[in-house]
Amino acid sequence: MIVRAGYLAGGAWAAGVRALLRREWAARPPWARWVLAGYLIGFTDGFAAHLLALARGGIHAYSSFPQVSLRVFFISLVVLDPLVVVLVAFGRRAGIGLAGAVMAADVAANLTGNWPRIQRDPAASLLPANSLAILLFGLFVLVTVVPLLRVAQRSAS
Image (cartoon, rainbow, N blue to C red; front, side):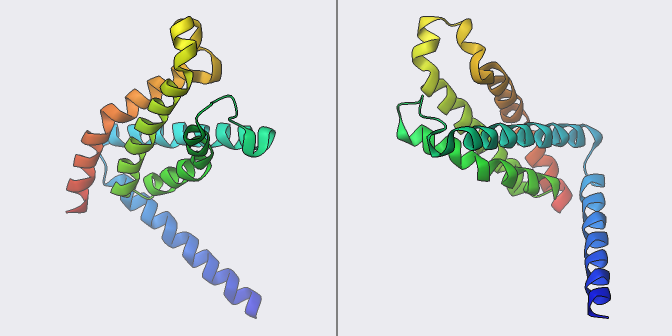
């Protein structure tokens, strides 16, 4: 009987979560849903890349960067990226703002850490570590943050 009650409670909880997600996403215009889906894909990919780097290299995964602060930041993305995914998926304004902050910091950190390579060979420096993809996704997020925040503000009121 106890197992059954737990199962039912879990089922009711899951149904409540599904209803919440449907309501939050339905309140957004179609263009905003597509942009938010892009956020979910991009931050999930970033999480997987940082998790893989951490699994391969351990705490020294980013030892090619001489600045300790950059190493710490890139490792912290294993927590920040999925946090953005969860907050954005549940339609929270904080997730949209955090997405902009994380990508601004990520682009700045990548440019700072790769600056010597960029100076040596600007064209070749965009290929390793998906620097071009990070830059383009960062620009996408930064360009869309303010319009998404406006939509989220209207949806909240």
